[in-house]
Image (cartoon, rainbow, N blue to C red):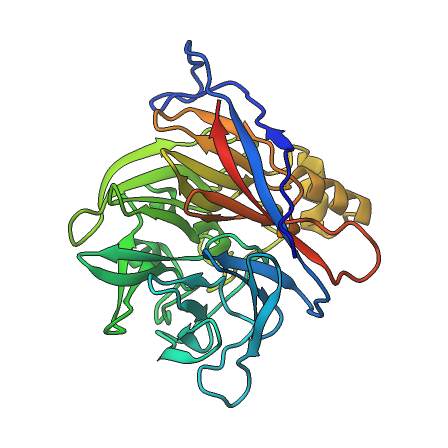
Length: 396
């Protein structure tokens, strides 16, 4: 199918800027202006899948999956089907529908992390290359269905690793309290040659998660982006509006900077007293409805793209949610208020809101200098044709 070239541009909305030291202070310099330039689009047709999602792309292929099944779809860059394969049941390399968004390693193989069955590497045609098995039995899982990055292939000292975070990775043999957060490490790094996995990166000093309280898991789930060129790791935790920047030129990341993020509508939590939250509870609308969440972070050129959900401003509506007395109208109102927002953070700490198009699952995928997303379906009939767009963020 012929690639459709679009000339439409989405214009960045520019608001007040913030500095790195004091992001509430307005800059006297003129703000940069951005636009999201749509480069092209591809439509794939006659698809029968429960939750069909774009995953990744290279020079020759587009990869999709059915998020509700262990089924992978491979197309050429014009949208013509090349292959479809499934790994479920009693077969080598089988994985469940609880797999993370897949990515490609440096040789072009597909890497899949399944929180039940482990880490798998396949060729594009479904041949199993490696079958790691699960690192640890997972105590919990959850989160929205998105196409945001949940893992990253990185290269260090000539070796290839998978950087990722499996939900709750530890068996808790003690009370769920302050000691848990003092001792917890938040990221995993798997050597794709030796299959050895290291748990690393504790909460930074002065993080809100070390205040002696306990938190729901969705509050401290990490989001991250590693820049191989500068050997810098960018990291945040979902309910903490702080960007932690690590120098990872050595064997271990070393915290070099932390930047407060002035994200409009973002409300950080203070945690809960011990006993209010069980382990490993992901969310709880009775005590923490519609929490603010940083849900994606991507290094993009010299900037960082941050996508987040704010907290509704009407406390009375939140109170009704907590009491279980909210109407469907209130739920939908709050849902609209808390839709994903994306901002650009420049190297000097300026935060600029970015208007994004309507997207499937309100999410996008950054691959090199390209931003990919799927067209949101608005019809009532069952969808069988799907369009994926490729664009670039351009500074004017």
